[in-house]
Length: 379
Image (cartoon, rainbow, N blue to C red):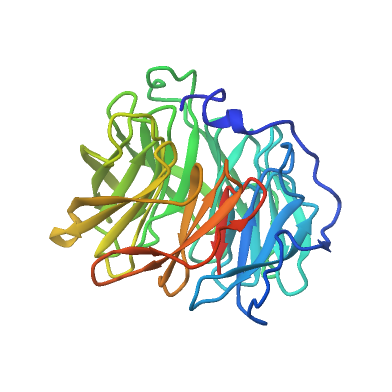
């Protein structure tokens, strides 16, 4: 998809953030015979769309069976379409994907909203926490910019310390401007990388961990019209895999840790054929043996074998995701389960992950109903 009328057409009117957060009735129906205790699962949604949720969805999952049980909602957080946890696990962060974009911190001990800060841009769609736990990084899709906020010891956010707009190179075919889609820290912690769909570019920055400022050190250009969306690193730290939303490909990129330079390789197929697919997100297992790609139009998960110490992806097959428009996928912390948030069907599906052969087996039982499920974050 391209520009604000493509991927962003799924975002409706803009909702205002309430002053505080409360926990309300269950976000999804409790299931008979559900376990009395489970691991936490947080669900992102759009609150400004018809049929959307009322805030951040709360659920638990059984780590053995993958069964999900809804437990409530954290109100007072508008359009929390992407979520991230603090490395110490005490605070949850959410984007407010509105025209007046923001980021919100929620203390998990009592589910209290600690406050909201402006990202300085429109349509923030991704955020991540620097490994130090001191900085929150966010990407403004509609504005094509990235922002940095300091994180206090309490987990609360301070005022923005950096805002960088991607002004060049020129936008790709069919794009009217930059569209920052992701911002993450490299495995060695030396650099921050921002993926821009509009400019067909991945930017590398150096983060000043004292001042919270960003300095660009390099950028890598994809072929025009690729539409890069999400990047994930191989655990070895020398290669990364890039999902291209617009041209329906993946690219293996070489990464040089000392300089932060990313070098894209040749585009590879997703196994979804010639139809419209819109790859969304790519994951790689911690041992580096397999990678998984969510395909929205095809409604599938592509499996790749990772070879040559991360330098090569070998397409294995595609697996039906069991829902419509898988926007986000995530592993459980032990990587025994893979969760898929299916936006159009309003559901979360769960798979058991075979780390020997890379196979995905659907968890037993029906998909979990969640309003406009755009992010599923297991803890």
